[in-house]
Structures are given as structure tokens and as C-alpha cells.
Image 1 (cartoon, rainbow, N blue to C red):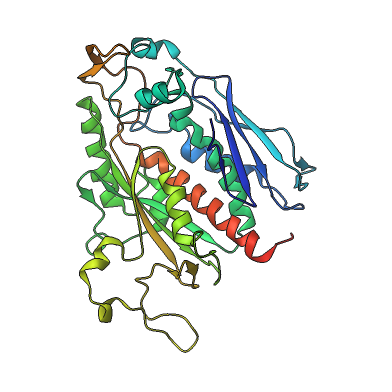
Image 2 (cartoon, one colour):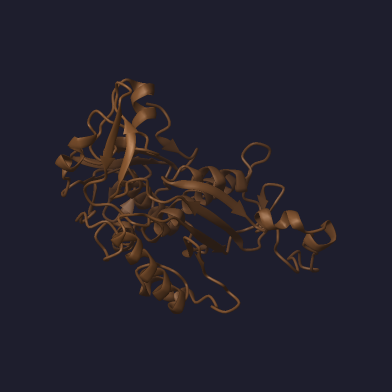
Amino acid sequence: MAGNSFGKIFKLTTFGESHGPAIGGIIEGCPAGLDLDIEAIAHEMARRKPGQSAIVTQRKEADAVEFLSGIFEGKTTGTPIGFVIHNQDQKSRDYSHIKDSYRPSHADYTYDKKYGIRDYRGGGRSSARETASRVVAGAIAKQILKDVRITAYVSAVGELELDQNSMPLDFSEIERNPVRTANAEAAAKMEDYIRSIRKQGDTVGGVISCYIDGVPVGLGEPVFDKLHAQLGKAMLSINAVKGFEYGSGFAGTRLKGSQHNDLFNPDGSTQTNLSGGVQGGISNGEPIYFKVAFKPVATIMQSQQTIDKDGNTVEMKGKGRHDPCVVPRAVPIVEAMAALTLVDFWLEDRSAKL
């Protein structure tokens, strides 16, 4: 299987399956001499881990990171950083009913047809559990990008949207509620809605918005490595993501050029920021902002018609522990992938030495 690495200079390669002994990764290109804040990494992992609230999967994983290489006396050495996260609460028997059948809208069918074999326990390599390794690397990338502030939050759950006109954003609220949205009133409504969806044995999708401040001018490598293109690739590589838009996005298509252009101030800043902090594929110093759309989790606790490996029609009902809505736990994953994208360009642009 190819496609397990992300980045050119700051490069992450991940390994492992959802129900294997462990997942993990290897980080290449991390500058030497970085004072690594292990507690900050643990904090990011706690934001993503299962079992953190009543509206997420109740799988219990400590998600403690064990570093194997690349760190000495609390500092990075410049050599590859190897790490593992041991799986502790797998219940593979919950997936025995899908051994010979394909779950609708999962990777079961495509993996089987492509490789001729699949790990049906929790989806194996296709499981979102793999993203825990991304959060480790993203937490380290954040520590390199000291002056860059990356803030993601849930801006929609199903048809419930965070209306900034009537519900002003308050980033201090994000970690105070289990939905991880930036308004207390919206959080209560979204939480109630997710609970009701769970009781129905169903799932719901949502949108995560991300706001990045402090990005210097000049990150991005046209023509094919534009900053927004790589951010889009990073976000679309996350499980369950169905869409990405930055700046004015699709709404910008309804404007005229005279309305959409970001006019300059004498210091090079812009009076508006419909460009979303990126012009010509290069950061312009303004805040970068984008949205990421997540589909409803494909495993539902309702009977559905599907097929088995021989093409026979069969009935299937989800079992086990699953998120009724993935977006609350995906917030730190979005931040991690943004950090990995930015640090790669930052190191490439400056050949930074810490």
C-alpha cells in the first residue's frame, strides 16, 4: 500500500490498524534542538481520543504516546522521530458480522477489490483511528510554528449552523463544550441534536471552520504546490471529509469582481480578506480561513441492505461503539493537518534552524 506519507521536508509516515497492537508514525525533517513539550502533545491527543464525552464513541483509549527515537534529554535531535500509540480497547468481535459482507459507504468493498484482502476489524487501515498519529505530528509542528495560531471549531451539525450574526464567536468556548463550537448557545442546541440522532440509531454530518493567524507572507510554492491546494489535499485526506473551501469559497461566485477584490492598504495589508489569506497560491500575511465538510458516519445502528463478497443481498445492522457525529473529535485533526501543511512550507521557505 502506497500513500502513507504526508509532507516533503517535515514528513510524516503513519502505520498500523484500528484493531492491531498499535498505531504509530515516523517524522522526518524535524529540526534539531526543539524543546519538546510532551504535555502539549498529550493535550492534543486528549482532544481527539474516544470516550471523552457522551456524544462520541465510548471506546476507551488512553492514547498515550511512546516516543522511540529522535528525542534526547527533552530535545529533538534532528533524526527521525519514531512513536507508537498502543491500542488497548479493541473489541474485534463487534465486527465478526461483516467478515464476508460490505458495509455501505465504507472502504470495505474498495479495499477488498484493490488488494484482494481486507482487515474487517474496525476497518483496519481505513479506520479514523489512524488520525491519532497525525495529531502527534501536528502537535510537534505547532511547537515549531510558535507565532502561528491555528483555531478550529465546529460551525455546523446537520442543519444547525453557527450564525455569527446572532451567535457571536467566542474561541474561549470551544474547549468548554463537548461539541467544540465557538458559542455556548449553539453548543447546547448541537449537543441536544446529536443526542437525539444517537437515540435514533442514526448519524449526522457537520462542518468544521478553521482560522489561522500569524502566517507570514510567502508560504506556498506555485504552480502545483499552492498553499491552498495543499491545505485542500490535507483536509480531504481526513476520514469522512467531503468538501473543502477557503476564503469566500462558493459564496464568492455570486459576487462581482468589484465586490470581491481585496483592496490594499499602504502597508500591504488588505481592507477585506475574501482571498482567505492566500493569493496566487502564496500566503499574503492576512488570516487564513477555510471550512471542511464531514459526511455522516457511515456505520448506523439501523438495518440496511447490502451485499456479501459473493454478490448476494444481505441485511446488515451496525454493532459496536461509533460516533453519532464525527466533527467534535475531528477539530484537533483539522488543526493538526493545517499545522503539518504550514510547517512543511515554512521549513522549505526558510530552511529554518532552531
